[in-house]
Length: 98
Image 1 (cartoon, rainbow, N blue to C red):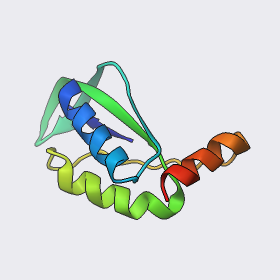
Image 2 (image 1 turned 90 degrees about the horizontal axis):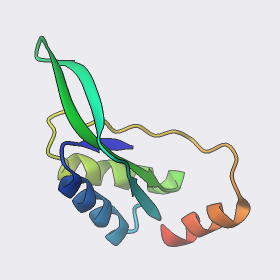
Image 3 (image 1 turned 180 degrees about the horizontal axis):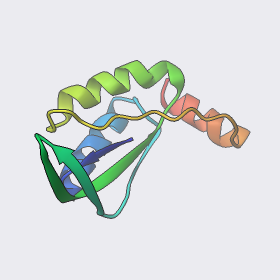
């Protein structure tokens, strides 16, 4: 998962990841309001969250791509392991990322 500052940027990242088969699916959520501390100041801004569905083996390449393609100095990149899921769906994710 990552966040970006515009819907267009979210779409670009999502498309780039899918084109490279780094994830089987990318979901872009509606804008969220983020409140955070940056360079000693409290900031508030709109961001679009992008959730990528991938397999553990593709994570290093996905992270490397996001670090290269992202325009934030310190992008949020968070991975959450999947402990359970529908067998058919997980099989599709594996197929689409190989």
